[in-house]
Length: 372
Image (cartoon, rainbow, N blue to C red; front, side, top):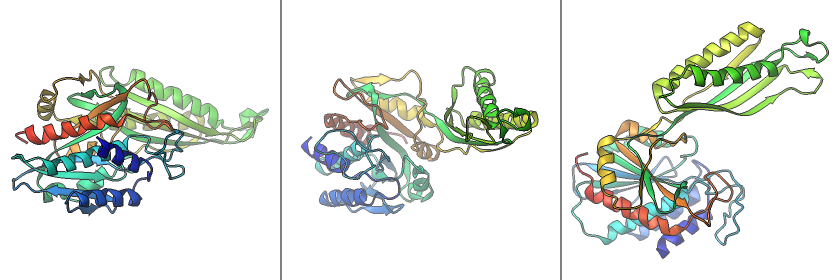
């Protein structure tokens, strides 16, 4: 436990953004070398450890390693030393748990069914480097047949493992819309084309799309989180910009909604005489847990287990792995009286003791998963 705590607190002090996690990578590689492992670089700051047990196939375990552009507000001895950057999503805990599992594997003697591949992956937050890991060909190189990942979750009680089969997390896309109207004096609105009015109409139609074009049995959300438009209170705004996110659990539905958005924008252009440019590229696919693996996974947990009744609208690039091979992504709860802050907040924190449970879960999976 003391070693897990040290790893976590060391890593918490050196957070780095995606694809520039050089200090983090150096720390991880040094610790792995101390355990006797030979590591392999992937995507520059990523690190792989292949543990060859002489088996035909391999199962993988993944941790993300990047942090967020957030200024930490926790008053703790191990506070972030990198100004404007913080491990506010628990990736320091994820790395420490996987290091703990690596250490555990050096201490036990067991006839594993599969070789093991440890993946310390950069840039989960952005741009989703799991896709780059898959495209690197390592699954073919090491004949990887299944993958497992864990995420700390402050919405779930401390120490509770939570998961479900099928959809677990959402597919997401980032919506950017620019509405170009025509400026005029507020006292002469008929001479302008009011982009703010058009934006309000667009937002109304977006929500009508969700409420009336999408089946109630296919959850979806479209949120506009930022609006910029206009220059003065007595002017008709010529340009207004919207930024939002589109999320659902089905890739076909996502592309159907993209088509609906195009129809909405075409209609607004014709109705108002404006011009609308927009994009909503898909970012991460949905996280979908393999049913057969889930049945084995859930049978390994004796207590403190929560089978989720519905998925979350959060997104995770672990989904790229699951598009390539079967996988299970699960949550480990951190919610307690002392720590109440959510993910991506400047005061997120957790008790390191829960990391022992993650290490134990990884060991159970390594010893008991069959038939992949």
